[in-house]
Length: 184
Image (cartoon, rainbow, N blue to C red; front, top):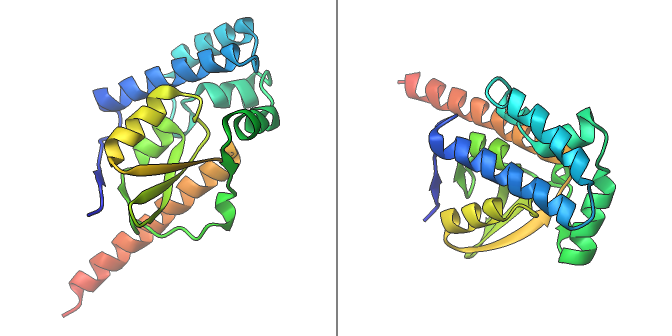
């Protein structure tokens, strides 16, 4: 049975996940020597200012650190997760995504946690993430799915394009479903 991972956009649960996952992720970056504390504090100031106004796809310390402040090198982050944590890198551009194929997921949850379940094999879910160093993200998905999770790291660009592709595929699927229901 597929997990029903529905969550409404900007619910208290989603807000809590966004806050906790970003705070923990930032602290992990400092703890692992990937970021200076001063850079994290600057990022959190901007994060807190834009939290309520920004789109879910933009609400992340990672986005601020890499793109706005330029104080985190994504290649270093990926290398650390592959070398020190033992995760594999996945290129979501090379993965054929299907809407709600084997994982029924609300994509706002994916944006909030920078994590995308991209397949399911037997009793294991395959997840690509930018936030593996955030314990609340790992715990949230593990508890939600209640099955074995195989984690992969990916780049922000690949994750963003993957989620955007799924959003587009789901819109097409819903459109086709409505058209089919109109036919006699």
